[in-house]
Length: 333
Image (cartoon, rainbow, N blue to C red; front, top):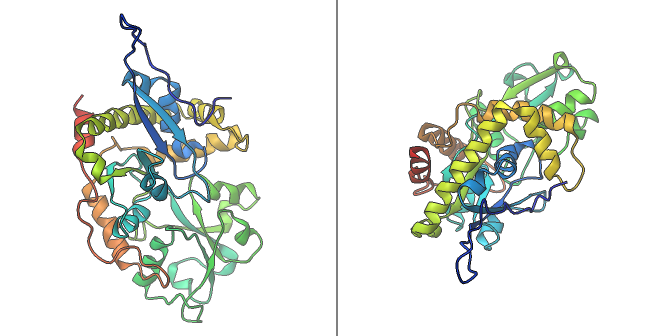
């Protein structure tokens, strides 16, 4: 099994006359979640030597429920992070100057998955029901949607009851909630695996409902972009990473096997990672890594409309929150 903290070895170390060597550029990537096919492109780039080919020495750090990528990079623990744009823009407004340098995920996988037996077939059926919502920055699309629908979230009969959902599907299976948050590539499959058929579900995609937000993108600290050497390092990193993503799209089963090799926990199964990779490929399809400014604008407008009772995402239009320079250079070579 390959370590998730494995460093990509130099493609060819050339010794100098005095015994010195050309050193590769070190890059540390912090993931948003645990080792899984959601991040297959980076593991494929490691495994296939794409980072080596660029002269990069890449370390991939898994995330988890107690790891906030924004805090890791702010503390100097990573050069670049994978994050959802909602969390990144919220962190930027709160003093962590994150900048989006690439957007591998073009499409959104966030769903609200409901049991048909509860009578929910359209959003008009939500009032009086309990809806499971992920927090820690994942709640903003939900509150934007409820605001758009004009539904209070105070548990009244005219509105909905919000259940702070853990990162599992138990509330739906145990009938604690009528709808829960799921990702197309993960929890939705877990619901099906639990014996609930697609015919028994009503599924809403947030982007289809007009409250879409960009998901997995690559972010760095703004000050680092003032360093030409760092910029060049990120150009190489993005180019190699997107090569990994395209390979993963075209070879999903092999990509799933590579992810399993890098999973030190042994918690993942090949069958589930193959399912996940098949769904993730739909989200990266059509992306060459460059951020679509229209998608960015949609995310910002959604965040500004999200009336969260505890913690609004952003209160004003961000400035300088993305750059196209990295992908422009990466795609030109």
